[in-house]
Image (cartoon, rainbow, N blue to C red; front, side, top):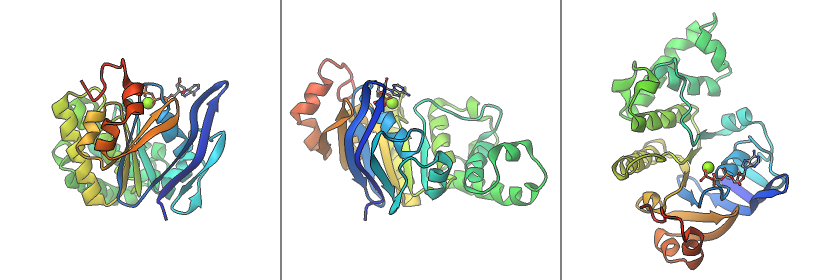
Length: 258
Ligand SMILES: Nc1ncnc2c1ncn2[C@@H]1O[C@H](COP(=O)(O)OP(=O)(O)OP(=O)(O)O)[C@@H](O)[C@H]1O
Ligand SMILES: [Mg+2]
């Protein structure tokens, strides 16, 4: 059984079809990339998986459960975590506190009360701090633990977002263009970090990327979409030589990642 299964999903916004009959399956411990030009529907696919939008039609199953149209917080609790295309860290919090927000999303406590330090949270606080520090350690980020999150270098902020997502203990991690705005060296370092996450946490990762070159080295399977539809799927070699893919990217100067 697939961990995640999208079956014929469609997402329309008024007259615009952002996702058109998109189907795919992600297995346990798989690393799969979703690439496509600007506006091709990548983020919308993540938004229907995570319950931000209910698909117009089609179904989404996770771990055997039908999660189509379920609330985002319930989907998080079932084991899907994500990061966003634009960094969303809590500005006033340090690194370890940002990770703790992820822990609170998993537990019954709501994150705002935790941040406000209301009574009743004191008891679980120490345990959560310990867990958050251990998580940072497993990602080799512990030396930043008490720094203000938004003062970290950009690449480290991206890693911290991933750490916070991991704190919800997901089975599936969705990463929306984590390498956006990075130079090739930074992007490569982040890809190695993602491989490390896959190995240590034994989870599945579904990764959106704009540039093919960034994911080619690490993703055994790549799905390419254009106008919300799958136009190719396969190994990096298959994709690179696929005419429809080349056409979709034609005229786009960052094809294959210039
Ligand atoms: N809430 C919305 N309302 C209306 N249109 C939307 C909405 N969200 C997305 N769209 C449209 O759906 C299409 C797909 O957008 P989406 O953000 O999924 O693309 P993307 O592949 O993630 O693009 P990018 O590479 O720029 O991040 C675009 O035409 C976009 O304008
Ligand atoms: Mg997007």
